[in-house]
Image (cartoon, rainbow, N blue to C red; front, side, top):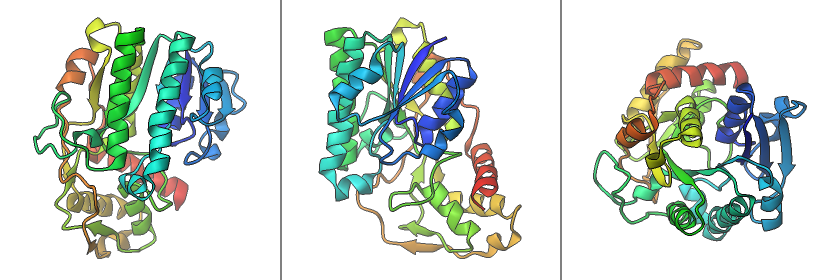
Length: 322
């Protein structure tokens, strides 16, 4: 039994990680302040003998020390995501994503955990026009959020070299799937479009819809976290990995897929008109990951492409939100 601390464990990715490792027989502790996570995501685990919840904030070092004590591994998911959120409020994004991250590194070091796996971001590639995105080639950040996630990588590298803390960063590429909320000003595009189509509302695509993303289903992310956590390949640690599928989909094609799959439940959805709005500030035009490094060093094999992932996500949303 591994003892695993998952920060942000009540969030979309975090709660899925909780289920994944509880199902494998591990002991899971969640640290979350519920700023953007939801208790209902982990309600079914509260009374599980291998589950523990600490309600607290990563901006408080003492809380981080308490949470890290006795843990084997840390899966650090806690952060304030969203490029627009960081543009509207860069101070808070920095406090959580940089200050909170540093607190967790210090607490992990002091607790002598085996390995620190953290959620990095594809936003780190910034203005680099090269496709596909290769881990060792990045550009200048295009948003405060991107800066915070790049600083995370720099701090992790320093802690691995200075204190011997094993660190692996996973640069998530537009993760989607069950439990991703469609609500709020900073909702991700897929659940937002899904709920609008289910309500017979016209989705608004920012710009022409030609921007493309490497949309990555949640099960691929769970696989990457597990492989990063348990790898015994010495060459695989103290680095960063693209966590993606290695394929890209335009926003126009994404909406076409969603209309097709949702129409299986409600035929009227196929006739809903799509609206195009202004381009969003800070957005990267195209995102496509090379996953060769993860394949070679972690034996990563994505289980879901965009179509399979969207079909499963649509099924979950229809069953849980309709």
